[in-house]
Image 1: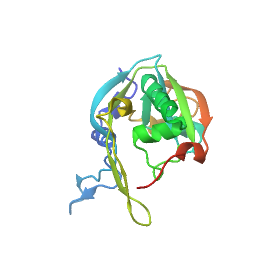
Image 2: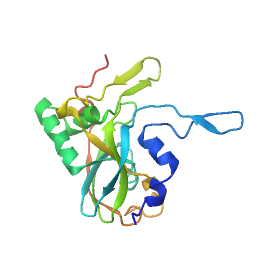
Image 3: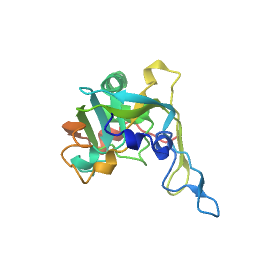
Image 4: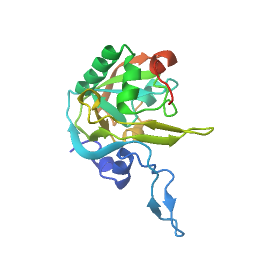
Length: 201
């Protein structure tokens, strides 16, 4: 039994992995959801068991507390994080900026001011898939378009979406779900590091 199996099997979990906005669906006159707006998310998410002993990384907003940062849904496995660091070194950019490019995270979504590393203590279920393109309207006008270069090996990155972590944010601030993930380290990242090299076209 995976500690988040119930949360993983909820219909909205896969929709969230696909990048669909489940908080503000288009509804019919009876109030039933009939469509969801698409932002980014991943392509063809598949069930992926994350085993005890694995190391995961994620980037959260800089103002997020350490306890809250660990409860976010989007993560990358250690092997994928190595690809992010190699990309950063090859292009002489900060690892946060490399993650922004490879994970398709525009500045409007997150300043990526905090990086988290956790150890998995209990098996947990995730959705795994390649990042999808981003096409969103900017506040004040204009659009942000980010293309996921999945046809290019150096830029192809599988992400993880772990449902249910936020449900435990107020219950176990030192451990998540409970005891499934243990925070190992946090890094603070400046806006210049997380955005160095970013331009709008």
